[in-house]
Image (tube, rainbow, N blue to C red; front, side, top):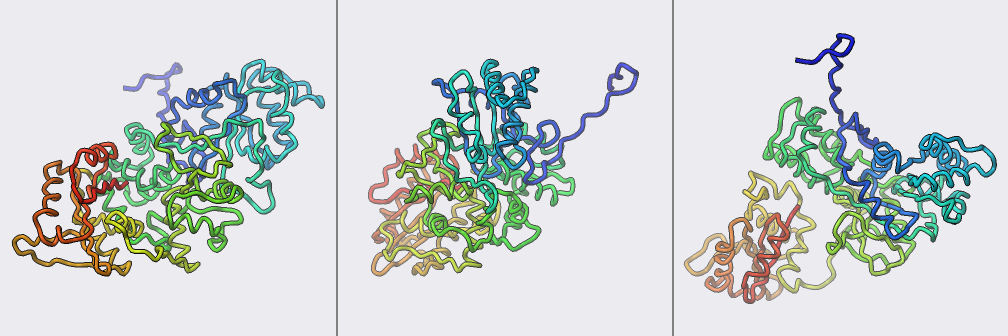
Length: 513
C-alpha cells in the first residue's frame, strides 16, 4: 500500500525510463543510462603527478558528452561543466566559463576586461576542475593563451573532451593542433558494464531481454555504447511487449542481419546505421570520399599509418582508433600522434561492415591477397575469416559455450575457401583408416587439412582429434596440418594451447565474439 503524501494525496508514481533517442545524450534520471560509476575516481587519477590538463578523445557516440555532464551534475563541488554554445567561438567560451564558475561558487565575477582571468583564479582557489566538451573548437580560439599559458595561480585543472566525425567544411576544423601544455592525452574506449542493472532499466523502457541476450547484443555491436542503444530500439520495434530469451534473440538478429546488406530500411542494420558511430559525417559523408588509406586499413586489418597527417585525419574524423594494447589494463590509452609504431584499427566492427559493403557496392572495392600461397593452416584460415558472415555461421541452435557448433564453422570455412578460388577437397565417405577431415584444400601440389573442435568438449576430445593426424591417411598425408580449437574464453584458450602437445600439427585458437 502506498503511503500518502503530507497533504493526504498519494505520491506520484515513479516515471519509467525510456530509451534515449538515437544520437541524443542520455539523461540520467529519464533514460536508460549506461553506468558511469567510479569515473570520478578514474579521472582524478589522470591528474596525479601535478598535471593541470587532461585531454580525452574517443570514438563517436561512446558517451564523452554524457560523461562530461555526469561529472558536473554528480560532483558539482569538484567538476564544473562549461557549456558548449555559439559554435565554440572565443566569446561563447569566455561567457560560458565565467557563468559556470559563478554558478558553482555562488560568487559574482566583475565583468571587466579581466573577467575571464578572475573567473579562472576563483576556480583555482576553490580547487575546481573545469570541463570543456568539443575542445577542438577551444583550441582554434584566442582563449588558448589564457587557459593553458597562465601562471599557476590562474590555472585551474581542465578536463577536455573532443568529439570526432563531426567536422564541417565551414566551421572550426577538428584537426587543430593541441596546445603543447597538454601532455596527458588519452584515447577512451569504454566497455559496456554488467548486464543486471541494465536489464532492469531496459525492461522499464519496454525492451525485455535476459542477461545473455544483452551480452550477445553488446558483442554484436562491438561493445559500442551508442550502437548498442540503437540496437535496442530495433528490439523494441520487434518485440511488441514479449520477452526474448537468448536463443530467440540470436535467431531474430540472425534473420534480420541476413547477409549483412545495408540496403534494408527496417532490419537491425537500418537501426544501428542511424548511430553517428557507423558512418563518418562532414566532408567524408559521401562514401566516394572515403580516404584511400582507410580503405586499405579496412581490408588488411590493424596496422601502422605512415604519415602524421593521415593518422590524425582518420582518427579525428572517426574512421579509426588506437589498436587496444592488451598489455594495458583499463579503457584509457595514452595518445601520441608522433609515435610511428602505433597501430590503428577500424573504429568499430559495425562501421567496418558498413564501409566494406558500400565501398564494394558503390566504389568497386576489390580485395586481393598478395600473390603468394598460404604458408600454413593459420595463414589459410585467416584468408577465409574476414568473409565469414555472422548469419552463415549462426544458422541453428548454439552449443553450451553459446557459440555455433564446430560443424557450422567448418561448413563456412570450406565454402568461403571455395569462393576464394581454392580447390576444396570433399571426403564424402571414409573407409577404415582413411578419415574424413573437416576442411581440406589442394593448392598446387600441397594439401592443407584443418580439423575443428569446440573447447568446451575438453582436453580428451582435443587429444582424440589430434590422434587423427597420426592414425588416418587423409590427415597424416597432408603437408599442412592444423587443429582449430573454438571457444569463448581467451585466457582458458591460451592455457589450453600452452599445455597441448601437438607435434607437427599447428594449433589454432579461435575466440569469436
